[in-house]
Image 1 (spheres, rainbow, N blue to C red):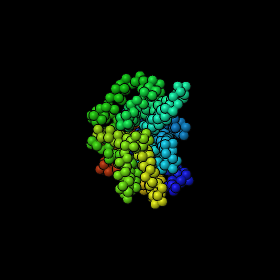
Image 2 (cartoon, rainbow, N blue to C red; image 1 turned 90 degrees about the horizontal axis):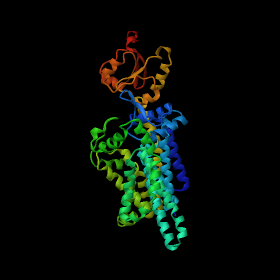
Image 3 (cartoon, rainbow, N blue to C red; image 1 turned 180 degrees about the vertical axis):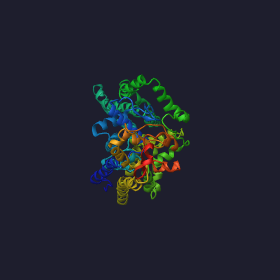
Image 4 (cartoon, rainbow, N blue to C red; image 1 turned 90 degrees about the vertical axis):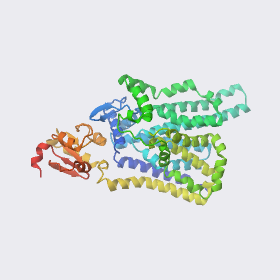
Length: 515
């Protein structure tokens, strides 16, 4: 049988994907504002040794960030201690979470189907541009995705092992062997609870909802309610609480309004009343049903493989619909399909859905596609073999080279992509004349400036260009060319140097010595 994904092709392409992602993690500057802000929290944890509270400068004040749990920041802070406080170090946790998802995808598909289908599922997962991008940025979303996906995989295994146990007991009703048959379902049940606990420590109760929805509907559709009694509910609850409860208790002891703000404001009112949850920035309100668009975007170009494979096979699509019942009864394909359906459907209930919340659908969509294509013989067709390999290679090379080329092309005109300014400012601050003079960013200081120049900035809230000009009279003024255009008039100070999209001016008392 011709298989589209051989071991050699799999390992070669996987190496291109992963090594390319590591290089991009090193090369691409911190993205403003979210990634740079989270990177600052990681660096501050490593610098201060305080791994309880994520802290950063917000609106000119050093404060604790209560919008999300600390696990991703703790992981980033630990990586800063190991690798040094660099953007690369803060991004390592997301990369490791991505690798965990890929390993889990490979293992479960190989066990339930075959190794070549597992190869296909892993590479199709990486063919999602958004999944690949978030697998190497300092954001909380890939750690959350890993927790949700591993919880779903654990439940698939729980159902599978429970079915095997029931078959074995039907053959051998001896009570002396029943304990042995229960070991694997119990282990996967505990892993399911632990994964939910990690999700709570990474993002909050949204992890329970997103992992619980496909489980609930799988049990409902297949009438598996009786299987719930085999879960380790008491020990599982303890295992669930271990990774998350201590941090929530300690944070409440340090900040008395934390639990109310986090659980009520951030996780309820944020979605029902957007205007009440803007403590850490603007609210991104869209419209109900936007999650369907986010789902499509989160799985580009992977989702376009569906019509690519089915276009000449209308009958195959008809058979897919006709055989939907058997696919939903199988723990692997049923849970995969229900994840793809229920998560976007859930986020349709709010106008506050965001693109990263749809990332957990990617590996499950890849599993469903890989299994389905194999079942209908598309993966054994020589023509389809070539099309699949070209598609995967295009994604591997394009996802690696594309961001690098764009970054190089626009960094001279885009202030947020130019980190050379920070190196030059550090060199300037080494000069005796400017050692005691603080830096002042016009408008609002980038979070990446806090990451690279901490301790040298005069922090301030976002302000108009005119206000920045007046408030920075005794500082080195750092102005992007964009903000200078907004100012609408020349800055009457001595220009010390230009660095691509940035200009650095001396304090106001030096303007008479302008060149």
